[in-house]
Image (cartoon, rainbow, N blue to C red; front, side, top):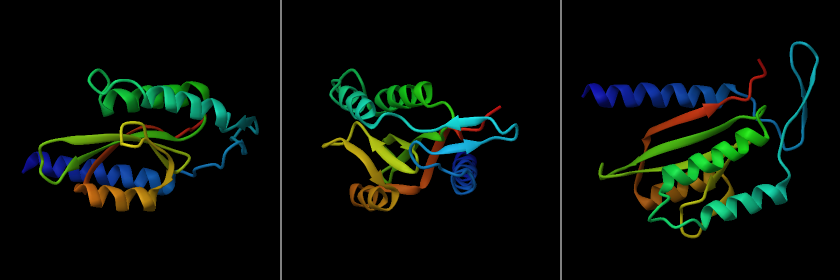
Length: 148
């Protein structure tokens, strides 16, 4: 029961962060408190190429956690000022979980078949429901893109 409460609390914190953190459009310029210009966004072709490379890695060696972590790391390294998260969601059976990436408010799932690139959250949530995932149990980790 305690584990379930922890999961709910983490979900709520993640949902709050997602709702309050502004997600900039690709290549949008943002000013921080020191009026330094910070550029957001990645070259779309390079991102697609890296996504496809990661998606093509063999599942036997690179499960959803590993693939999502690789993609998260690539995005964060090349666009450290944008919000990017990995999200872990549990299947309703409780027997396994799935991990995907949220970047610029869009979903990137390099493990699904076929791999899903830049899908709207609404569309992906419908897919999660069809696959039998429990959206009440998701945990996101990552960065909100704040400039320190």
